[in-house]
Image (cartoon, rainbow, N blue to C red; front, side, top):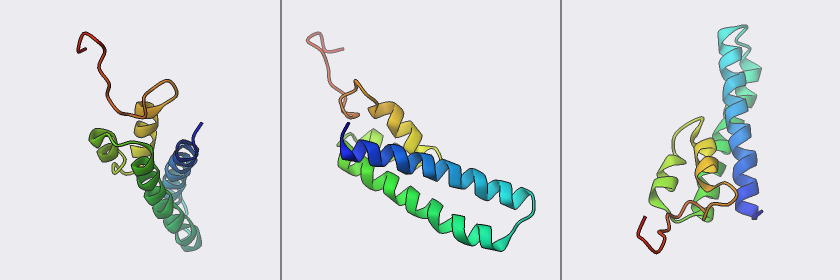
Length: 96
């Protein structure tokens, strides 16, 4: 497993978890310190997802998928998971 893939997996999970916690805080008690802590964590994880995707693949669709907030990292993981060619689409001898 490559370093960008591990970084992508970790940052995608942190991005999603931090967003869920931010929304739960907003829907319940809305504590400003929680939002002050989790907001930057979510933003940094989002940027890490984009950066790791840029290092991991050259496929334009996969790179554009990374910019989808909250679930972009998970979608990129799905496209570039184990056994896949880093998101790059390759064709077989028949062109399919």
